[in-house]
Image (tube, rainbow, N blue to C red):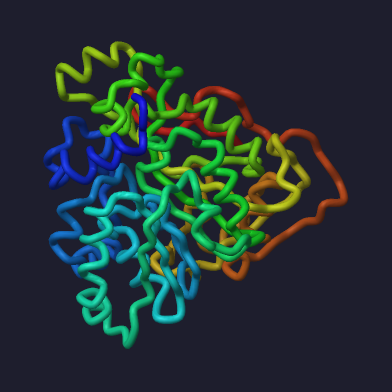
Length: 349
């Protein structure tokens, strides 16, 4: 493919007119939304919904008042969901390079402002390439949260996208995004197939390369939130991909000083207060950390920091210090974090 960006723009601007035009389910959300997200979706314009091509739910908890950036915002679906959760005092900025998608997103700003009962819009959409964020006049350390939904796989220079996201996040900020990953590196032949690239398959990162890249740019301890195997039900596409296995995965990456590259034990514990909206009985930090309300749970140093040094801090009680190190936190391992049979994640700590 001589120009990936032009191919992607053509595919999402001209080839696809609605989500049903996709040839595989790689860019389809397989996860059932929570009821409060379903309620937010019911407020979104039909045209915005029809041109949605995401692969997950890039909507974390505790969003009131946040400033959020959506990389590859498309028709604006996720931005309009987030608009409802950040409230009138929050802000959501979507970046996309496809004119047709931006036209849909911008066409319905007034509709959603009125629908949400706001006196002004808290959403804006900017034309731009997520591999050139430095050209968009976005101030460093100015965002509380960066999301993306099945778009980073479409970028050629994924390391730069992640590095720029790290630069734009405030200390304690988070990148929370869904994307497609593979169980091995994709061959050059498949990478040069414009349909497979547009379908979010041949641009998928090998999961271990992703972990290495995320850590290299500063996101020391990537955490998987949800993962699902992707089935390719198009015979021609399946034949091209052969034995490669693909996964739709939601990751959360934290910009926190002092995270370690292994889960270390300092004898610390936390207790969830039950105060995060829509998470009254328990809170899931990731796919292997569930915190029931009022239960004291031992945690590694990294998990302690992810709760203590971020917007989640007010919702937890914290126990212990950093005075004594007890070695590696029990249960850590280095196996592939996705189960190839049922999509359940293997525990890393």
